[in-house]
Structures are given as structure tokens and as C-alpha cells.
Image (cartoon, rainbow, N blue to C red; front, top):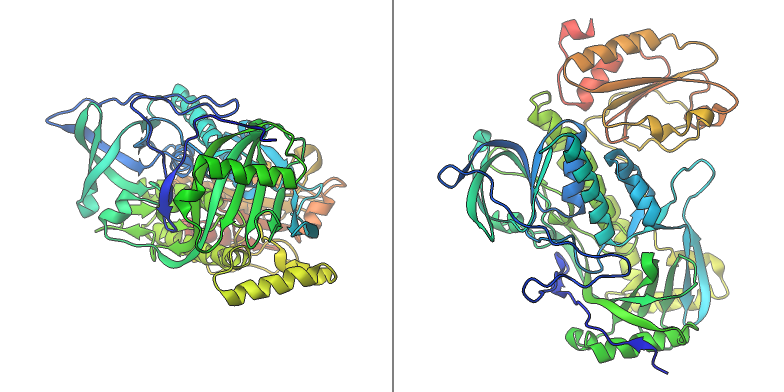
Length: 593
């Protein structure tokens, strides 16, 4: 029995591995159809006051692209009091199935942006997944998750909700500080002139007309089909895979728990891989691999989509449930990056998110890498734009995030080569691993999807010489979560500023007063610093032990939560020097004295 419901289904236009699928073309002013409980809103374009076609004044930062990365960057800049303009070509939040899995690290970033309650309120938390070979379970993975954590390792949340919740936070910020984030809907960038140190002149167009505006800095967050990247003649470089996946979102009232399921060589789609994820509002995402010779456009024909989903649901015991298709698209994996994320005559053009790199979906490193880009860039760009830090701080953004790309890409490419073998040799290796895993569970580790995790900036120029504490994160690594009893959690203390953590082991830390004085000197130079002193107690002992602080320690954290330096007992002047190093702002002899 066919239990599908026939409804018009939006479908992405085919894209490439670098850019991904293109947004669907809608008729006239028609709104995209509602999905589950989500209703789309169309935002009207507007023209600013103009003088001879030019907007007077100069904006500190213009962000091209109002997706999750662009909005996150704007909110991050706002945390540092930096105003920005977002030019978004569409007049709604995104349409269709794009990013869906948000990692714990990204949730920590979203918390600093102010949107965490909405993400957790709607998102579906999950901790692991199951892999099947044909119909037999061969592997079960669990992501790190224990009582120390206040956030789940992953939530599933559709990108249109992600964008809407970030937009809601932007609107809250603007209500408190009008114009802090000026988001201009239905407005596309049509060109730009780079005047070096004088900034840039951008040319924009919407339904009401064309105009020009000045910007001190421009950040391209305009996605895989980036206009800015193409205008500069830049290309993503790396590996593009031939394997193609059909993405089908269906509305299905299933009671199956939220987890990631993968079927290798299932009888109902032999020779390929099928993935399935639960999303809010009873929306289920199904990804299945097209075999060599299968036509992409043919696979997206409604009848063929219905036939595949019907077979799949019948095979997993849910063929009796009614369902309807709400989205279809084609995806091709690629691991590619720009060679630098900073360009232009004076380096005033920056790239983030899919405009800077492309990641395979396996291990969910796409949008999660984009959140990390925005988190790394926001505080650095704010300090440089305000004249507090040298422009070398933006070079560190490029070097750190490119290093992170290569770390992420290595794991993602291993997963991709297993999920979508690029050659017959890889295919034979996968078949051998899957068949042997039925009896040899150790081999099943080859099936591990290697989910995304926080990256250490091991060779960061922003890190300072530090002490070996015997435990805890070294410089460049993200400060891990720790429960602090009645004081909450450690990440509660990490704000959008430099954070000094002084661990007092049973008595006041001898360096506390010196640290406080040096933190004040840094703040006087325009570098935001907060200091927290933590006392050893029964409720904090485990956290102190995990951080190597049972005998006292001092940690310096960057505004993005990465460790910049740590000491057992810092000598006078070391903290200030480390703050200045992490901000690329040289301290004077008088400052250190």
C-alpha cells in the first residue's frame, strides 16, 4: 500500500561539490510552503537615504550573505559593540534541507550569541547512531557525553529554524540598540571597488533600485556560489568526489528515537548507502547514494522519489505510516578551501563559511565549521576595526581556520571514502570491512563516522609560552566544560572577551592581585578582560583536577574560548604580555612594568 501524500515539493537546483545545491526558483511572490510548524515570512527591501546614488558615511563592516554564518558574525561583532550591515539577496530565511546537525561546540558559540534557549527548545538532542550492513547491525557509536556537560553532543535542527532564531536575536539586539545590525533583505551585491586602506565601495541592488555604500571591511559569507569569491577570480582547491547523494525530507509521524542510522548495501537499494536523521516537527531526512550510471534528474522525479521512500520505509518496518515529501535535492561531496581567507589590496576582504571552504556532510562539519569561522573572526575583526589590534590578527584568522579545515577535512574525507567509495578498490575494502565486522567487532571501528569536535590551534601565533600542568587543555585548545557546583559550569564564565581564570587551591592565589592589575592595564588599552577566581572545594575538586589546578593555576582564554596561555604561578608581566600577544597589540615597557 502506498501511504504517501501527493503535494507540490520544493526541489533544489543541481549544484557542484564546491557550492552545493542551489536554492529553488519560486513563482512570482509566492511564499515557500510551510514545513511542519514553520511558516515563512517575506521581508521587504528598502533603500537607505542617498546622495547622488551613494549612501552617506561609511559602515565599519559589511557582511555579504545573511545565512547562519553571516548572522552569527554580525551577532559576534555586536558582542564587541561593532555595528555591521548584512546584504542578503533572498527575502526569506533559507528554503529546504541544508544544515541539520549542530554540535556541542557550536551550541557553546550560539550561547555567547544569545540564541541558545531557542536552539535547545526546538532542537532534538542525540548522542549516537547505528550502522547496518544489509539488514544486520554492525556498529554502534556514542559521542562523548557525561555528567560534566551542560549541553548535548549534538542536536538536530533544520537550517530555516537556525536562521530564524539568529534573526530573532538580531531583532532583540536592534530593539535595545537600533541599527546595531542592519540586515537588508532582497538586496544583492553587484560589484565592489577596493580602495585599499580607504576601504571599499560596494554596489548593491534590490527591487527598489541600485545604490552604493562605503565599508571599512567586507566579509563574504555568501555561500558556496559566492559572488565575492568569483569576482576576485578565486577558486576552492582540494578534492571533489564523484559520489552523489539524493536528499529527501519527508514528514513522517514515526516514534523512532533521534539517532543517526546508516544502511550499507541494503537489499532495497543494493550497492549504495542510505542515511536517515530525525528532525523537529516529524521531518525525517533521508540521504541515499546514487549508483554509477543513475541519472540525477531522473532520481528526483516525484514518482521515483515516492518509489524509493516507499521501499525504504517498508524495509525498516514503517511502511504503514502515512508520509509526504517536503524537499528534494542532489548533493556531491567535496573537501575544498581557499588558500587564504584574507584578500584585497589591504586585506580588507575576508571569507567565512561555505564561501571559504566546502566540507562533506559526513561528520557534520559544514555549518559547524562555519560557526567556528564566525566565532574566530568576530573578536579579531572588532579589535582591528577599532584600531586596538594590528592587522596581523586577521592573518591569524586565516591561518587558524585553514589549519582547522585540513584537520576537519582529513576526518571527513576518511568518512566520505567509506560512505561513498571513490574507486572499485575502496569499494572492495568497504565490502570486506562490513562483512568481517559481523564476526569481528574490532573491525567495525572502520565504520565510525568521526563526528565533528572542537579543533586545537596547535601552532597558533596567538599562544604564549606556558607551564605543563600535567592535565587540562594546552594553548590552542578549547577550554572543556567542567561543573562548578553552585557556581554552574565553567563555560558560564566565558564571555565575548579575554577571560582570566585564577584557581585558588585552599587559599587566595598569590598571583591574583598582580593578575587583576595586569588585566586592568589591558582593559585600559581597549582589550576587554574579565577575571574570575575559583576556589577549591568539594564541588570543584574534580574540575580542578581535570585542569591540573589542584595546586593553583592561571588560565588565559581568548574571546572564542581557546586557551592562549596557562601557568602554575605566572611571573609579573606574563599575563599582560600574553593578552597583548593574543590580540596582536604590542605592550609598552611602561605597561609591563
